[in-house]
Length: 104
Image (tube, rainbow, N blue to C red; front, side, top):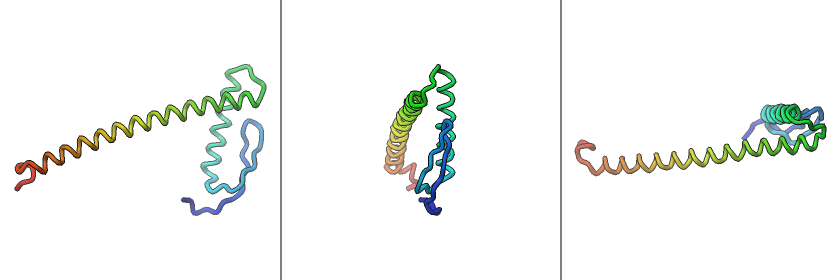
């Protein structure tokens, strides 16, 4: 998928450094780390928690909620697209059966 060889990378999340190995897409991994860091800081700022593990769990719950909502949206859009495809196929079949539509 990526032409770059796997390499090591260290990301910083919520004040802690995490060395990662076999990273094939450093740009994406860095973007994810920045997102997780930002989310953890947001959670920590909105509740009176000083415990990093608790902040991490609440952040994981928040990110998982986003993930599940996006999965539901993808399923809804996929279902809608399948409906459009079926409608288009029926219209094409009708047009093929109609000599005026095919010019024959």
